[in-house]
Amino acid sequence: MSEKENGMVGRLRKRKVISYKDMLDFSPTPEKIEKYERKSNGFTEDSFSRSEPASLDMLTLSFEDDDVKKATEYELERQRNIEERNRLFQELQIGDAKEALKALTRKPKQLPKKREKHAKESPLPLRSKSLRLQHLTPNGDPLPEKPEVISTAKSAVDRAVSRKPSGPIPMVPTSGNSCDEEILKKMMENFNAGCEKEKSSVNLSLDLELEKFRQELCNLTLREERVVKVVPGHVYCMAVHPSESKLLLAVGNQSGNLGFWDVLSENASTSIQLLQPHSLSVNCTSFDRYSAVKIYSTSHDGTVRCGDLNKLVFDEVYAAGGEVYRNRNLTTWHCQVDHSSLLIAHGNGEVAVVDCRDPNKVQDWYSCHSQTVRTVQVHPLQDHYFITSSAICEVKIWDRRYINRKSPDAVCVFPHPKGVNSAFFSPAGRYMLTTCRDYRLRVYDVTHMRTRPNVVANIRQKTNIRQRLTTFKATWHPRREDVFIVGSLEQAQPKGILLYGNHGERLHKLMDENLDSVCYTCLFHPTQNIVFGGNSAGRVHVFM
Image 1 (cartoon, rainbow, N blue to C red):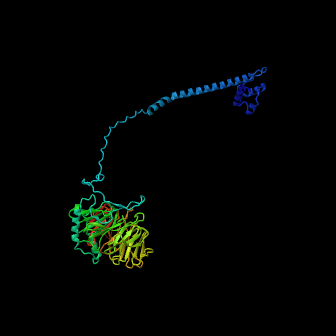
Image 2: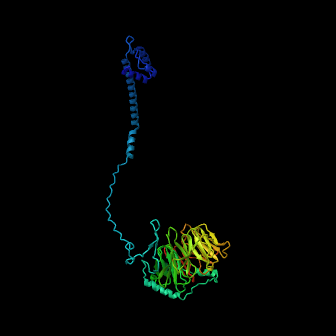
Image 3: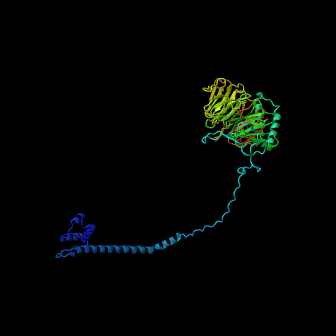
């Protein structure tokens, strides 16, 4: 079929005059045209002449006229509907209401605000360098050169361990101290003159009843002039000279400093002398029990020194060999055995016996623990016994007569749930006091060491938050078996220092408005009713 015939057949198909099947075999014959003409609504019997067969052109025109007719009727109907709707809108005045609503809801256009130009601020003046960066003292004087140090690290991987030069070190005030060497000599000379008349040993005073002794402690007070910053940083250890006519306190801190404070001095500006015999933290210091003019100090730098207050020098007693931090061969604590020998605890779990008359010569080694020995102490009456505390949650008592380095057997073992900060015998050796990192103080009866010791007291330290307990070490009264002292962990004000009996009863809490911080290190005076407490800022509080 031609293109015109195809178009006509397609329109018949859309109007549903012919089916799809009829459309496939459609042929424009007169009979079929007449047949489909009757089906179409737009055709009549007079549309075609019987004498003349209808042509496809006539059929197409007829269909097109019918479409135009129907389209015109639709447009007329649509136009009448539009006019009817507009008439109703005009009667109801919908258009006016719409315009009025738009006028009410139309927001006026807001012009963008112009940014105000701020005046350029003048640049701040440059801050001047601090006196520390300028290497000047607070008075404006230049600082002295730093002393020479010796590094024991053999590689960059190891932590550098700096030590003072071996041999005697003069007692020279450190940089930043306002006092000079002449004032230090004068203070020590006056002090030594008063010490010559003192006794070399102190006897136990157990004749005074505990209740009367407690009342004497309750009368202790803290005055404002008795709170002094002795050393910079954290107070790690303290030692009090046993003199009864003078009051000299030695304080060690985390920077290797050893500060001396003449507490009863009238001149506050010259009563403190700051020395530096070590390069790392001073963990333990004590005055010689047989010579009151000597003081021992043990540091994490692996050295132990003896300060002579007459000669004003620090002699080297012991220096750990090897790589200190790789082998954990640092020194942590010391205890005097007799007039010439010391027990020195190490970070590798061993204890060394050193003769002070022959420096750097170790007489014997005791392998006590697999990790750090934190404290070591000889029994006050039976010097062949000594006690050690360790970071591996145990305390052991040893007998030097039977100890073997290869296979050591302890006389008694005291397991703890956490690491132990310290373990000390009472002055007569009947009790043992331990400070554990589980916030508990434990008192054991060690009268019979070969049998299982009894726990006399188990005291829970009250605290609301987790505290750093590295330097908390409960210590006995130097002349009593039934009193010990420890800093308070209670967070509520006022702060204080706690005194306990050997059975765990609280005897007293030293408090004062001038005490507003936690005292980590506390101790008694050896011969007088005086209590010392040091905090983490280097301040010492004296109750007397």
